Image 1 (cartoon, one colour):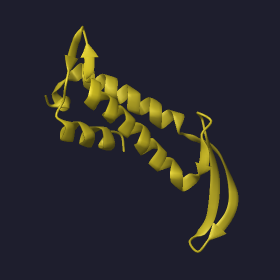
Image 2 (tube, one colour; image 1 turned 30 degrees about the horizontal axis):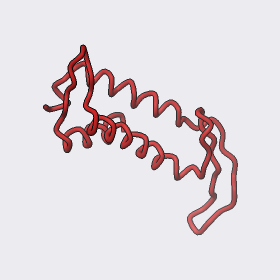
Image 3 (spheres, helix red, strand yellow; image 1 turned 120 degrees about the vertical axis):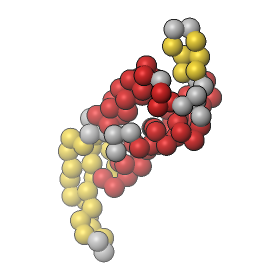
Image 4 (cartoon, helix red, strand yellow; image 1 turned 180 degrees about the horizontal axis):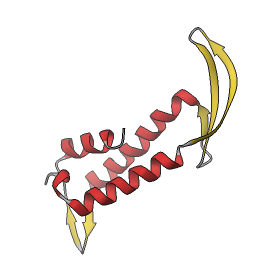
Length: 99
């Protein structure tokens, strides 16, 4: 099934991804040295995660791929029916939604 054509799934997915993006919103940064490209910053996110600021997009992508893995293995349950989606379309959708 094409995930783009299932409105309940799309609503669920948009809410999950918005929540992930919000959790990884940077609330504080502090300078932490520099390299050949300039200053480096240590970033603190709303959800308590902290790392170099350039690592945060990778962590967000990792969380999105966790959603993909879960839905790929278990499907999406709605009204006591489990839906399974085309894996390639699902992965593309999850990684590109709200970029």
